[in-house]
Length: 233
Picture (tube, rainbow, N blue to C red):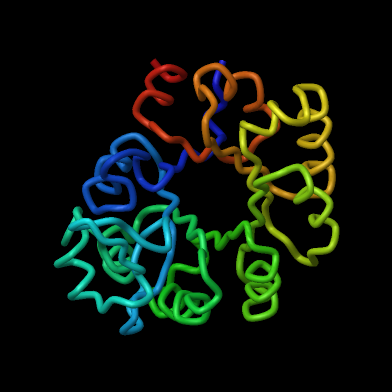
């Protein structure tokens, strides 16, 4: 039976063609308590929700950091569906947020935006980049800061962080450390007082979440509708 105590967040809203867009965020809140989104900065200093450093359009590759927000919305295939972080915070104030910081340049403006919106208590700031995690912990000691594991070696960095709030563990870890070793890791993290956020890259959520949920505090789901319907009926 699925635990109702587990927080469900939509991975980039809903992972797929419309991920990190307003329609994805609106849809995910029909099934989840909040959303995970990626944060990057445009060339004119605007924070947007976008995973990759750039995108292809019109036969050319464009870097987000070299475009103004107006240029990005004109050139990007998803155009005006890509929101600013401020737009997300303003529209979805009742949600729980996990802001995945993709570049250090975005860190201070992001902290300022969340704090000015009075949403620090509803936000976890995370990154797979150890330098960004260290900077987050340094810039905002009271913030909830998470470290995302993206490979086996990343596990050994966890004890080096002070005042870490959460560790974001991919379901895919089972493929490179094995199921028993993954359970041992999750138990160890919980014993340390760290929150465990499960997330997915290429695994089957419906197969692996039921086997790991009892060690987790949150699931960042690619498809919150399918996950919730499967476990809540």
